[in-house]
Length: 298
Length: 334
Image (cartoon, rainbow over all chains, first blue to last red; front, top):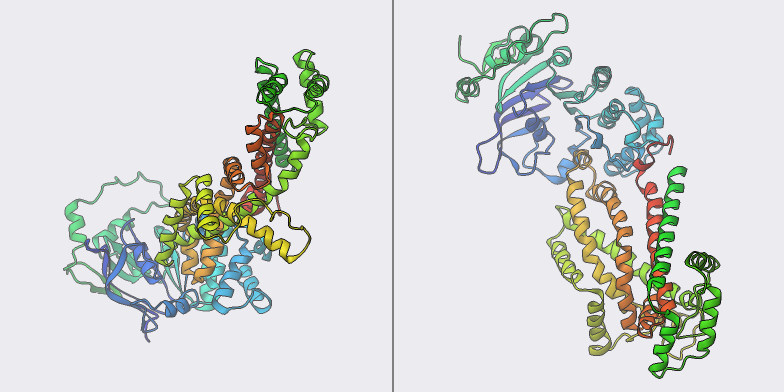
């Protein structure tokens, strides 16, 4: 079975400066939920934005490639990309006030997508599809007449999920879709995301900090550290037996909701540790079934 | 919304009242009898003033000039409210109201046309110039228009006059219609009218385009960093949709506010342009009134300018919620 998304030797950098990401090798199967975790600045967002062909200004892919269904996405072909965008790879952004155009009604923003991709107005069959995806994320069709500021943060986020699912893409990149939301909204957002995956068989690349959430929803987890993928494997295996020292440290840092204990002393890893953890000369090796980590043989 | 509208209208009334009162005080603060002074000066220059004595008597009477200030103030307000701005000294017995009423439509037409053209062209130019896929030529045009904007209106008017009325005499030098032509609702009249308006409108519009282009480019630059543009791009929306509905639509909001603020500066700039082209608007009236010390006409024009600037700001303030839905946030369902 060929992978849906194949990232091979991907290196991203800004100009002549040392690369900020990679080389990364990672693959996703159809319908799979892959979680990407790691510290801020570790390369999670850069990786997800490379998949979306939306790297920050100045950043470039220096080496490697990303393939969707075996077709390489780079170098970018503008026409081909317009067909890939949203129809094949959609995006659920981080909840932010201005993620939706503040002076345009939600309905018009759905209309823009339909008009620009299919050249038709939002009516009839398409209107039904929009209402269907809204219902799926538990929103009334009345939100179509609203402006973004009239909705709560959680509702806006569900509008974004509905938008991402409208064209039934094969892959959705969700970049911290639940951060900045309260716990109840988080739950609803995640739940709807998962339901839609089950309904449409969409693969989800979930970027986030929240390890508890990842443990619950992810099939596989990739741990990024200093621009390197240091461990990649089944969520269960990683949470049970993390192989990479950074992964172990990361999992230890998660507070428990059940047991109240003194917070473990927050010590920043020493420079030597950091150097060692991100050492590129250490190859990824299998540490369990389907589970690889970048660490020396024990 | 209603509350906001009422408060805004009250502020407008207050502004106009303050302006009227200052207008009253300035005149009274002058140590000389302005009317007698003006009539005397006019007489000494050999100008004949028809019915000079009657004018003096009329003013003493109407404005209660022999009474104490509070009474005078009350009379002054009463006269203003009944639309009586006094008589023109230069065109007696024409009233200031008559003179203004003839001039206002010309000025308004000139101003609205010039401002509309400059606003649309300038904002489009500035927005396109900040768009990363726009041709480089546009950027050059912005710098050119900025340079032109640095030139005062009246100088632009003189340059245009020299170029298109003297060097290549393709347009008339001034006025609003060819002297002696009949004014009817015919195509020829319309063309004649437009030909006379091109240079005055052109010099104001040309002077404004760069200003709008520059500020629009600034606003657009910040809008381009907004999340909704990135999101729209990842959605695969067309450049045209992103530019118009996501970029310009958001960037235009502060520009509309700026439009109201600049109105005052604009009107004062227009005065000289009208005078240069002898266009029969308020500017020319003011220019002539200043030359002939037509005191009451000057007062009337100043009052008119204050009221119209306040009115423009009122209109922009009331229209703004219609283009920015967030302003009406307090109201459900709007």
